[in-house]
Image (cartoon, rainbow, N blue to C red; front, side, top):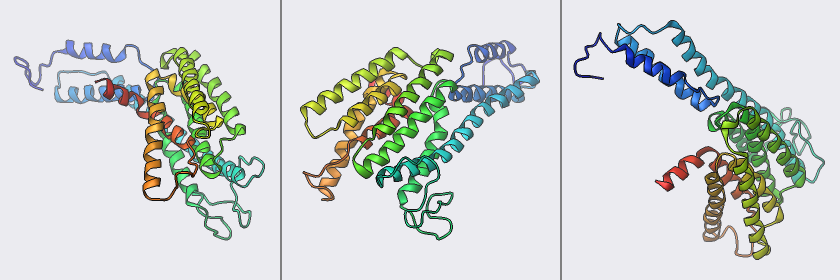
Length: 314
């Protein structure tokens, strides 16, 4: 960058010192923030190469590499955990669909009872094809799990939001299969998510607000309860209970995230319902589960809720 009176080899070192001080102050724990810091450090190193009179300490390069690794490792760990949990999601969803006891480990083939392959598309010994939903669950879980560390402000919140994400995916599959949101999944998932969220907040309070989480959970629950009471048969009580944990989880980030999740669920649901009616795949009297729309809007709010609220307020 050209500056009047500053030659290529006489870049003012005071600017570099100010830049260093700006970078070093208040380093947060979030991976997204660590990535931005690493980018800034890399830019500083590149600038020092352009201006030889700038002597950057060798520790700068190691710190930049360390912060880059702070982004890569959590993403890889979360993605690997997502691949493992995806098999549990498929196993439990199949057990719920077939009205069998809970099965959290080792999805099996419905025809021969043998284990499924790595991508959950067929069974190992006989090659019986499985439903395509298994592969969709695997890919979705791995990709979204890997994105969780970059979506939250603190690494201490990653466990809570991983559990929340996995619960949303599992409840989406069960609701699409049976039009039910089972308490045996929603109840424990809600408790575990809240406990991990509070624990993460106690370690690093800057990631969000527990007050906003309580307000978001209670507000979303009350709104859905009122709608279920007014529109009888349109919403089940499982949707009402689901609204509570969604409101708590995304409300911890901000109350704007709750609005994105709530309004988004009705926008997505209305769009899909209109499409099904126009294409005559569903009739007016056919029941359409609302839970998947709530979970989809919650995931959208988790990842891009802040962008949506900023765009709307702008």
